[in-house]
Length: 126
Image (cartoon, rainbow, N blue to C red; front, side, top):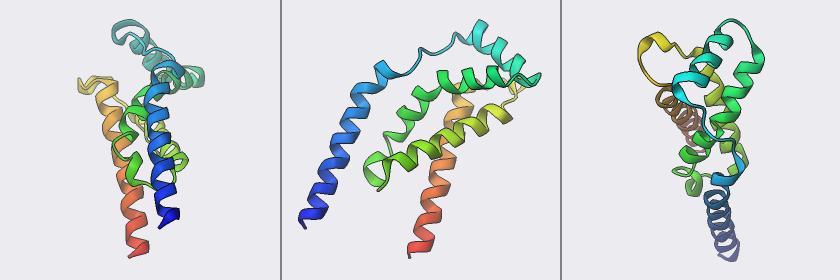
């Protein structure tokens, strides 16, 4: 009982800290028209630095999305890693010709990666 109370309290404190710090710890988003489009083009041409910059500037999106799942998931560091994997997959497979913004596409990929992992964990536990 005490252990579950402490675990719940620590989860809520970490969630609160993430909420407060997410605005100050990540780089500002890229401008969609100029910087982001240019980096996407460079990434499609094989520039790994462009991909890394896209990932770094979209980590705020990962933090925003994981807040939905944070209190229900036991290991917060894992869910951040899983969200980042989803972001990297999104950037690698993004097609600007589809007329969907990178943020919208990435959000779906991040959520899918998190949900697939959570479902996989529930299957093995049940």
